Length: 451
Ligand code: NAD
Ligand code: ADE
Image 1: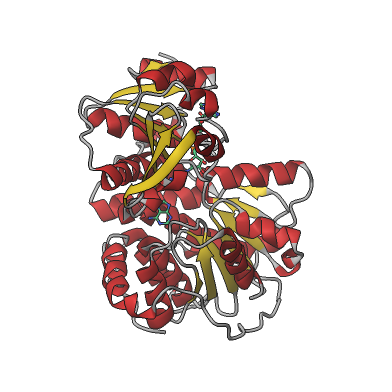
Image 2: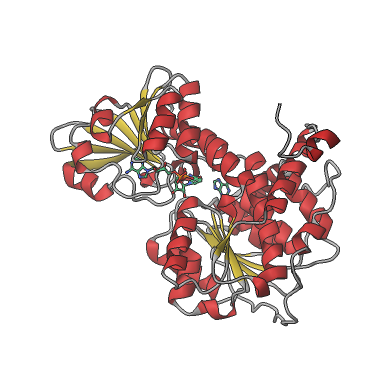
């Protein structure tokens, strides 16, 4: 194994091994064969010169992930374990792959979105870290799925997913038989797996990493909030101050985006279908309206619901000339591109990740990053500091599956709270933040005691 970049241990924090292994035994004595050789599919190996330094920079800002690597690197608990990962191929994902490899795993990585791959990162993983990557930015649907299959042909023991495409393909094509368990990074993927569980078709246990507190409260909110604004600005270079921005969905992602747009001087309008979330948005100080009204006044619309057709024909028909449409939800289904095409007579690329649709009535609509996740298509995704927590949960989930799969059913599980809280503790320690401990009296206080 090559030297791992940025692998200084940072602030010393206690071992997590005890927590991961606590509930049950090891892999039940199963033996794992080593991987077969296979040719990676990447854009250009010479890009690795750029990728290596960028990965080092990200890794240097991921102290919790590094601390987990330090805890386990001598024991190599993942030796003999094959991992197939379908994640956005970014510098942060590279850091996770390097840690899992350092812990002994054999890895294949493909993209979880055709437009999010950073080709320099893919090149570096292949050239400098001997990790097999199958991903090229801008790949078509056929290549996207063929890359997923290259990862499944590896006969993985554990799958890492962001959006569920890898796991669904494993189910559809019979690859699930050897798989011990999988993880899922995002809300849409977890929702897909919950449906599979309800229908009784889920064939192996899934750890919903998204549902850890140290994931969704930070990644979905602050990560997407910042990186979505970053994507909009890189694609357009517009002034946000004074603009009317509509955010569809006031879940964790929508909250983060709305908060950051407000901070940049936008007047923010929220659309929702959930009355509680709508009320929350209203009391947080936002206007709340149905999309058909909100879009009439919108300079920018950003979707963050995970649902299809949030912006569709009837909305485009009443949108202001020059409206900018972007999506932060997992799939490119939230802005109906079919409707946009149907209403348009001309389409041209204005800047990178910015396309102009000229409608038949002369109005113009601007679509960012093909309606795919704008923060990963037009920017670099969440900053490393926040992916530190998401991917520490991923690393702990892999170890947890490896140690506990015999005791798990074919269901969707949260990562145990003690591991989630350990990530929070380590993140605080790395930031130099000290918190209070409950006193003896507080711990001993009984329910009998009132005022
Ligand atoms: P969430 O479940 O917390 O929030 C979704 C919200 O959308 C809910 O409040 C729901 O009521 C609302 N909604 C549903 N249908 C709607 C409609 N027709 N109109 C308006 N609102 C509607 O989910 P989340 O964690 O906020 O994730 C949202 C999406 O973003 C998912 O697809 C998720 O996978 C994705 N995601 C993307 C990134 C990224 O990097 N871009 C990061 C995390 C999550
Ligand atoms: N999802 C959102 N941001 C990401 C990042 N930087 N790396 C991997 N997955 C992500």
